[in-house]
Length: 587
Ligand code: FAD
Image 1 (cartoon, rainbow, N blue to C red):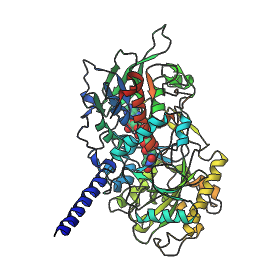
Image 2 (cartoon, rainbow, N blue to C red; image 1 turned 135 degrees about the horizontal axis):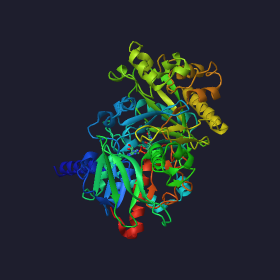
Image 3 (spheres, rainbow, N blue to C red; image 1 turned 60 degrees about the horizontal axis):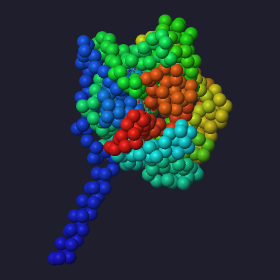
Image 4 (cartoon, rainbow, N blue to C red; image 1 turned 120 degrees about the horizontal axis):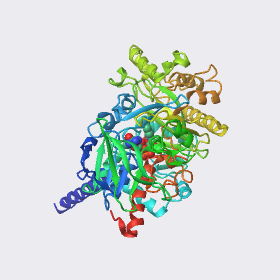
């Protein structure tokens, strides 16, 4: 009896231990109870404007952790042009990833744009930013990246777990991802580094912001770590410009606040208080931040004058150095709909090519009736439209008329390759002065021959993975794959607006150029040393910083969101420490 009691006690303790261990993973213990009220922009007082220590423009991946951290000690206004992620099914559920991306409505959480290269792309328009529409994979920057950008390594080491403890999980590996893991290892992308957030050569399982049920946790959740009585969050608040006081005799123009429009189009002004440390911090993303600086009069003076924007500061570098990591994908049809999976595994090759995979986006009963977005096969049918007539509108029209296509062509998965640190770069320029519209963005994919060489290396690595036959049991006809066949299907499944060539399956260089798409890791436009200093203060003016992916000259890690969220926390703590000393933040 005593033995029996002992065994029961042991089992009970083991269960408690197991539950505790599980609940200490990811966000189980992080509560959203402390979220500040998410108010409409029209609620902003028109008559007696409030003043703030910090105005953060853009409640995205960097902006949310930054605003939360600053609010622990100061009054913060966070202005986000999009709506709330809470209650939006396209945001919250992984199964709707592609449906959200292809929603072209003006209030969609994703705003599509087509770069002048002919590649369909997306930018976030929702509180939580890119973390609300992305594929969820979580993987830290390498230590060499942290050293290159000159960040305090100890503070970086504290800031990553601050994010991870709240919103990151380990994935439950899907069959498609398990096949990739085994294929990568058999193809020599080794060693296997297990479950890790670290950026290390070989094959690994990374983190994810989706929980086991496919529910998405986002940077918006991080607002609950702030002080709600110091943090005012306004939704549908599109900032039109930063307002400067350029009095004569002043050395530098100084930011005094911002002008923004509410959801009814009504204009408001929000002001900084008179403290000399108060700042406008721009976290509007790699498209939004350079766009906003230009609209505020900071940029190449001739371009500004062409749009009748009064010049606050001539800086020819605003909008330059835009880069997007080219992605090329191989489509593999399957005999039955594979379980949906976004990125869970990554192969990190020494050549700076990363291999990832996704499966099962295209065949759900809901999605079969709509434009399948960038990750599916159907837009490949656009190749039947003459190149000059291809446009986003044509893609939408096509989506409405293709309901009779056989389901099977939407059934399968992709193996993707991404080039790290592309040497091909481009630029961003205003098309008009309406902040709601996309600027013109050019990435010049594969202009640099080394990028093309690495793309070919990546496709050959995928060929080696396919030869391991790890995918043949999932394939449509059990046959395994000839490379010519999968290249041919991949050209058909391709979703860009670039004209195709007859030698796409013979020349891997041509295949890379013609089927390039985006992995949405675009960055640049406000580079350190050109537009901002090492503390991310905008050069030549005072009271403005930029904290987001626009400051990167290469995208960190295999995928950037981990580092961008960490960066928001990092700069928040850094700013507090600059003002209040080392002990400024303890939670
Ligand atoms: P954002 O998060 O885009 O934040 C900018 C915010 O500013 C937005 O909320 C926007 O609405 C707001 N804004 C812009 N202009 C204004 C204005 N004038 N006034 C007010 N608000 C404004 N990364 C990964 O690590 N893993 C992945 O799996 C992954 N998959 C991706 C899939 C997709 C479809 C996309 C789009 C991205 C993906 N990424 C992924 C990349 C990653 O999500 C982004 O690099 C990152 O979120 C960018 O963060 P940011 O803070 O620079 O910009």
